[in-house]
Length: 237
View 1 (tube, rainbow, N blue to C red):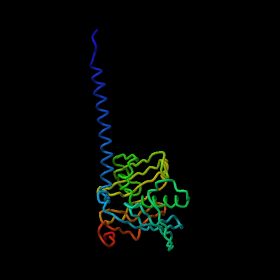
View 2: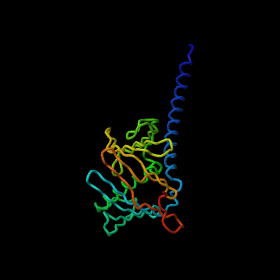
View 3: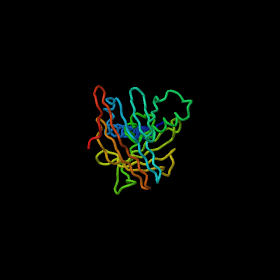
View 4: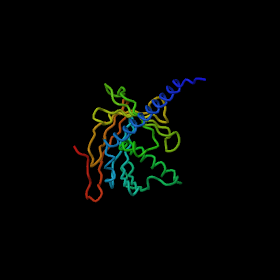
Protein backbone atom coordinates (compact mmCIF):
# COMPACT_ATOMS: atom_id res chain seq x y z
CA UNK A 1 0.00 0.00 0.00
CA UNK A 2 1.32 3.38 -1.00
CA UNK A 3 1.32 6.04 1.76
CA UNK A 4 1.03 9.66 0.71
CA UNK A 5 3.43 11.61 2.92
CA UNK A 6 2.72 14.98 1.33
CA UNK A 7 -0.23 15.96 3.63
CA UNK A 8 1.81 14.94 6.67
CA UNK A 9 4.64 17.17 5.53
CA UNK A 10 2.24 20.10 5.11
CA UNK A 11 0.80 19.53 8.58
CA UNK A 12 4.29 19.39 10.06
CA UNK A 13 5.32 22.59 8.32
CA UNK A 14 2.11 24.32 9.46
CA UNK A 15 2.85 23.32 13.06
CA UNK A 16 6.36 24.71 12.81
CA UNK A 17 5.04 27.96 11.30
CA UNK A 18 2.42 28.42 14.03
CA UNK A 19 4.95 27.70 16.78
CA UNK A 20 7.40 30.11 15.20
CA UNK A 21 4.81 32.88 14.98
CA UNK A 22 3.81 32.35 18.61
CA UNK A 23 7.45 32.49 19.67
CA UNK A 24 7.96 35.73 17.72
CA UNK A 25 4.86 37.24 19.32
CA UNK A 26 6.10 36.33 22.82
CA UNK A 27 9.48 37.85 22.00
CA UNK A 28 7.82 41.07 20.77
CA UNK A 29 5.75 41.27 23.95
CA UNK A 30 8.81 40.74 26.14
CA UNK A 31 10.70 43.36 24.14
CA UNK A 32 7.89 45.84 24.78
CA UNK A 33 8.01 45.09 28.51
CA UNK A 34 11.75 45.67 28.65
CA UNK A 35 11.85 48.70 26.34
CA UNK A 36 9.27 50.69 28.28
CA UNK A 37 10.74 49.83 31.68
CA UNK A 38 14.21 50.82 30.48
CA UNK A 39 12.90 54.05 29.02
CA UNK A 40 11.71 54.95 32.52
CA UNK A 41 14.90 53.92 34.29
CA UNK A 42 14.53 50.33 35.50
CA UNK A 43 18.25 49.66 34.95
CA UNK A 44 19.21 52.42 37.40
CA UNK A 45 16.58 51.83 40.05
CA UNK A 46 18.94 49.80 42.22
CA UNK A 47 20.86 53.06 42.78
CA UNK A 48 17.83 54.52 44.59
CA UNK A 49 18.08 54.44 48.37
CA UNK A 50 15.00 56.55 49.14
CA UNK A 51 12.27 58.10 47.05
CA UNK A 52 9.67 60.53 48.33
CA UNK A 53 6.61 61.97 46.65
CA UNK A 54 3.27 63.58 47.37
CA UNK A 55 0.33 62.09 45.50
CA UNK A 56 -2.45 64.55 44.68
CA UNK A 57 -5.78 63.66 43.11
CA UNK A 58 -8.89 65.61 42.22
CA UNK A 59 -12.26 64.22 41.18
CA UNK A 60 -14.82 66.99 40.91
CA UNK A 61 -14.79 68.91 44.18
CA UNK A 62 -13.03 66.12 46.08
CA UNK A 63 -9.27 66.35 46.58
CA UNK A 64 -6.86 63.85 48.11
CA UNK A 65 -3.25 64.34 49.16
CA UNK A 66 -0.90 61.66 50.52
CA UNK A 67 2.80 62.02 51.21
CA UNK A 68 5.12 58.99 51.06
CA UNK A 69 8.76 58.15 51.63
CA UNK A 70 9.89 54.71 50.47
CA UNK A 71 13.17 52.88 50.99
CA UNK A 72 12.96 50.01 48.47
CA UNK A 73 15.91 47.91 49.70
CA UNK A 74 14.88 48.23 53.34
CA UNK A 75 11.20 47.68 52.53
CA UNK A 76 10.24 50.65 54.70
CA UNK A 77 7.43 53.09 53.93
CA UNK A 78 6.62 56.29 55.80
CA UNK A 79 3.28 58.05 55.34
CA UNK A 80 1.91 61.49 56.12
CA UNK A 81 -1.84 61.90 55.55
CA UNK A 82 -3.52 65.12 54.38
CA UNK A 83 -0.79 67.41 55.76
CA UNK A 84 -1.08 65.94 59.26
CA UNK A 85 2.13 65.94 61.34
CA UNK A 86 1.73 62.31 62.43
CA UNK A 87 3.89 59.77 60.59
CA UNK A 88 2.97 56.12 60.05
CA UNK A 89 5.71 53.61 59.21
CA UNK A 90 5.16 50.11 57.86
CA UNK A 91 6.93 47.36 55.95
CA UNK A 92 6.28 46.87 52.24
CA UNK A 93 5.83 44.41 50.74
CA UNK A 94 3.96 42.80 53.60
CA UNK A 95 5.03 39.23 54.32
CA UNK A 96 1.67 38.26 55.82
CA UNK A 97 -1.93 39.45 55.87
CA UNK A 98 -2.04 42.30 58.42
CA UNK A 99 -4.49 41.91 61.30
CA UNK A 100 -5.01 45.66 61.32
CA UNK A 101 -7.53 46.58 58.59
CA UNK A 102 -6.35 50.18 58.56
CA UNK A 103 -2.78 49.05 57.83
CA UNK A 104 -3.98 46.92 54.94
CA UNK A 105 -5.90 49.90 53.56
CA UNK A 106 -2.81 52.08 53.90
CA UNK A 107 -0.70 49.54 52.02
CA UNK A 108 -3.30 49.48 49.22
CA UNK A 109 -3.15 53.29 48.97
CA UNK A 110 0.62 53.19 48.75
CA UNK A 111 0.49 50.63 45.94
CA UNK A 112 -2.07 52.74 44.07
CA UNK A 113 -0.04 55.94 44.39
CA UNK A 114 3.24 54.22 43.50
CA UNK A 115 1.64 52.70 40.40
CA UNK A 116 0.76 56.17 39.17
CA UNK A 117 4.37 57.30 39.63
CA UNK A 118 6.33 54.17 38.66
CA UNK A 119 4.00 51.97 36.63
CA UNK A 120 6.44 51.47 33.73
CA UNK A 121 8.88 49.78 36.12
CA UNK A 122 6.14 47.37 37.18
CA UNK A 123 6.23 45.89 33.69
CA UNK A 124 9.45 44.20 34.83
CA UNK A 125 8.68 43.94 38.54
CA UNK A 126 5.28 42.27 38.02
CA UNK A 127 6.22 39.19 36.05
CA UNK A 128 2.82 37.61 36.70
CA UNK A 129 1.22 40.27 34.49
CA UNK A 130 0.81 39.45 30.80
CA UNK A 131 2.14 42.14 28.48
CA UNK A 132 1.03 42.23 24.84
CA UNK A 133 2.06 44.62 22.07
CA UNK A 134 -1.17 45.34 20.15
CA UNK A 135 0.40 47.58 17.52
CA UNK A 136 -0.85 50.99 16.43
CA UNK A 137 -4.21 52.18 17.77
CA UNK A 138 -6.15 55.41 18.16
CA UNK A 139 -5.01 57.57 21.05
CA UNK A 140 -8.09 57.66 23.35
CA UNK A 141 -7.45 61.25 24.52
CA UNK A 142 -5.60 63.05 21.73
CA UNK A 143 -5.75 63.15 17.93
CA UNK A 144 -3.65 60.58 16.15
CA UNK A 145 -2.39 57.08 16.89
CA UNK A 146 0.03 55.51 19.32
CA UNK A 147 1.45 52.06 20.00
CA UNK A 148 -0.93 50.21 22.33
CA UNK A 149 0.52 47.91 25.01
CA UNK A 150 -1.93 45.81 27.02
CA UNK A 151 -1.00 44.79 30.56
CA UNK A 152 -3.27 42.14 32.07
CA UNK A 153 -3.00 41.01 35.71
CA UNK A 154 -3.97 37.51 36.93
CA UNK A 155 -7.60 36.91 37.95
CA UNK A 156 -6.58 36.10 41.52
CA UNK A 157 -4.23 37.74 44.00
CA UNK A 158 -3.47 41.33 44.87
CA UNK A 159 -5.89 44.05 45.94
CA UNK A 160 -7.64 44.34 42.56
CA UNK A 161 -7.22 41.06 40.64
CA UNK A 162 -7.85 40.90 36.92
CA UNK A 163 -7.07 44.56 36.27
CA UNK A 164 -6.13 45.58 32.75
CA UNK A 165 -4.08 48.61 31.73
CA UNK A 166 -3.64 49.88 28.19
CA UNK A 167 -0.56 52.02 27.64
CA UNK A 168 -0.33 54.26 24.58
CA UNK A 169 3.29 54.90 23.59
CA UNK A 170 4.43 57.87 21.50
CA UNK A 171 7.17 57.88 18.87
CA UNK A 172 9.70 58.95 21.54
CA UNK A 173 9.01 55.81 23.58
CA UNK A 174 7.17 57.69 26.33
CA UNK A 175 3.65 56.94 27.54
CA UNK A 176 1.20 59.58 26.29
CA UNK A 177 -1.99 58.10 27.76
CA UNK A 178 -3.33 55.08 29.56
CA UNK A 179 -6.65 53.36 30.12
CA UNK A 180 -7.47 51.42 33.29
CA UNK A 181 -10.12 48.67 33.31
CA UNK A 182 -10.90 47.45 36.82
CA UNK A 183 -11.22 43.67 36.91
CA UNK A 184 -10.84 43.56 33.12
CA UNK A 185 -14.16 45.31 32.48
CA UNK A 186 -14.94 46.22 28.87
CA UNK A 187 -15.80 49.82 29.81
CA UNK A 188 -12.80 51.91 30.92
CA UNK A 189 -12.80 52.67 34.64
CA UNK A 190 -10.40 55.58 34.22
CA UNK A 191 -8.30 57.10 31.46
CA UNK A 192 -5.77 59.89 31.60
CA UNK A 193 -2.81 61.49 29.89
CA UNK A 194 0.83 61.12 30.88
CA UNK A 195 2.35 64.60 30.79
CA UNK A 196 5.20 66.70 32.14
CA UNK A 197 7.90 64.05 31.91
CA UNK A 198 11.01 64.84 33.95
CA UNK A 199 14.34 63.21 34.65
CA UNK A 200 14.77 62.28 38.31
CA UNK A 201 18.25 60.87 38.79
CA UNK A 202 18.28 57.56 36.85
CA UNK A 203 14.49 57.62 36.47
CA UNK A 204 12.04 59.21 34.05
CA UNK A 205 8.70 60.14 35.62
CA UNK A 206 5.45 61.77 34.54
CA UNK A 207 4.25 64.38 37.02
CA UNK A 208 0.81 65.17 35.59
CA UNK A 209 -2.16 63.06 34.47
CA UNK A 210 -5.43 64.53 33.20
CA UNK A 211 -8.68 62.77 32.38
CA UNK A 212 -11.54 63.81 30.11
CA UNK A 213 -13.98 64.30 33.00
CA UNK A 214 -12.03 66.79 35.12
CA UNK A 215 -10.13 64.01 36.87
CA UNK A 216 -6.49 64.80 37.62
CA UNK A 217 -3.52 63.16 39.36
CA UNK A 218 -0.30 65.06 39.90
CA UNK A 219 2.85 64.77 41.97
CA UNK A 220 4.64 67.34 44.10
CA UNK A 221 7.65 67.26 46.44
CA UNK A 222 9.24 64.49 44.38
CA UNK A 223 12.86 63.67 45.18
CA UNK A 224 15.19 60.73 45.68
CA UNK A 225 18.45 59.84 47.35
CA UNK A 226 21.13 57.87 45.57
CA UNK A 227 23.07 55.20 47.46
CA UNK A 228 26.35 56.42 48.96
CA UNK A 229 25.56 60.03 48.02
CA UNK A 230 24.39 62.86 50.25
CA UNK A 231 21.47 65.16 49.57
CA UNK A 232 18.26 64.86 47.62
CA UNK A 233 17.98 64.73 43.82
CA UNK A 234 15.06 66.66 42.33
CA UNK A 235 13.31 66.49 38.92
CA UNK A 236 15.20 68.32 36.20
CA UNK A 237 13.53 71.38 34.68
